[in-house]
Image (tube, rainbow, N blue to C red; front, side, top):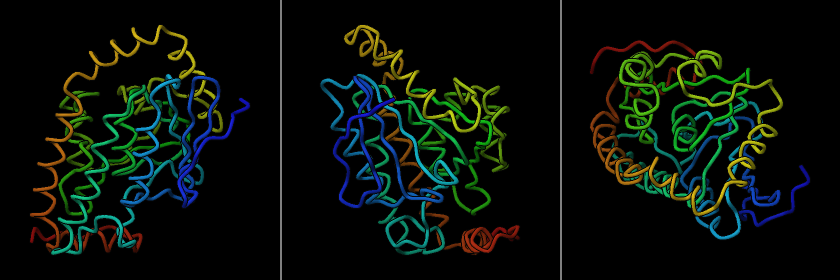
Length: 267
């Protein structure tokens, strides 16, 4: 690939380049590409501008993780341990998350490393996923003491069915790449280091189709998804706000930041 440069956000954390009719959007916030509201807004703004000549897009990232979720301690992302400030910050965060579902072109996620929490939500909001062999996925919300978010309560069962979704959501366990692919969470399982390359090839396959037919087919496949995602986000926000600031949420976030197993008391 010999991409041409595109616009990128002022922070330099979202980089847009083009390879013919395919856009490559790279999140450059290593090592873990934690999401904040401003970063998610920049990503949503970039996606919103992809109509016209662009026919498909790849979302990738650099660093150790594809995206390890929200950066709780940044001040620009929801922190379940914060209690009173959680609802407002989460509402702003999810307003940007909802925009991902309205992207005007098919999206391929190139997942090279861990996709956790909101990072998994971002990958699931895309139309297709390319998973590297070193990647793994986790919807770890119950281990943080909160309800799932980023519309994962909608997108995960939609992709893998209620039983497998319940397995991931109720345990919060880590799912390795091979299992994730077998569950239907990835359309391509590839060698580590080739994720972007394969995702761009897949995006070009989409771009080679008749544009009106691709758009029509995608609209059918995603019929009602944006509206359902907005409704799911609203419900998730209410449940997360109810649990934010509880002893379990404070313990869950503290344990994650300290690299230890949490001890929950149900309070």
